[in-house]
Length: 282
Image 1: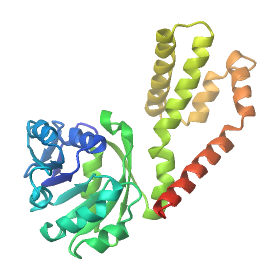
Image 2 (image 1 turned 30 degrees about the vertical axis):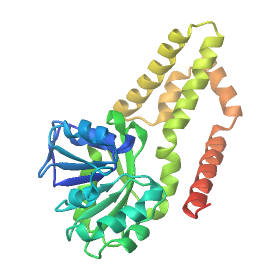
Image 3 (image 1 turned 90 degrees about the vertical axis):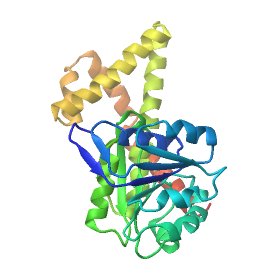
Image 4 (image 1 turned 120 degrees about the horizontal axis):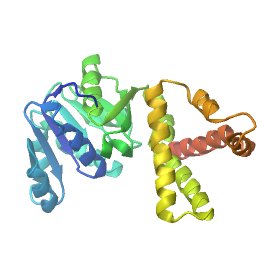
């Protein structure tokens, strides 16, 4: 996020896996203020002890404290559910009576609909579903958010502020969230695959693995930063690199023979089909 100060109300985070910890790191940035502090629950006592050492964080271990989740959510305005999808129904049933009226429950559980959340929670509680991606760990996430039926504009604004602590936020209808997951959710894997392939090509041309990594990683990072800072369309930047009758033009011609737009369309279609299978319990 930028250097603007963000102020958030009391937060409870249920589950402190990799994504939960990434979000927590954003909330602990100096530009973020959380009035009332952050309560985090995690199964492991060892992990809870680590989290409790962070400024403004109170941590509970569910393994030793059966009331941990209920105590964490009492009085919390934002409740982040960051457990595995299969654990969600049981967790929501457990905390339902402890949530304060007006609380906003934020799902980070892939594939679990807002309808499922709303069916297990009081009518006085709003639900927002989110889909962050893994660059959240370095503050470069792209997070999709979708409001439930009981969400008010101010609820969605709070959730936007929450996820802006770890990157950019895109609001979409829930019907588009699975499609979003095939782009930004799975997208880092596509980029890493391209980096793997170009690195392999560099090694085949005689560069050491270390040299190849420096060449390729630096090129991807530089190209991405140029794209963002220039404000130009990627097609225009590509044209500027591609001199007529030059070496880049010859390479691009080979890549275009592979019909990359169709390839990515088929890849994301396959991911979307699988997302729908998972949502249906397949």
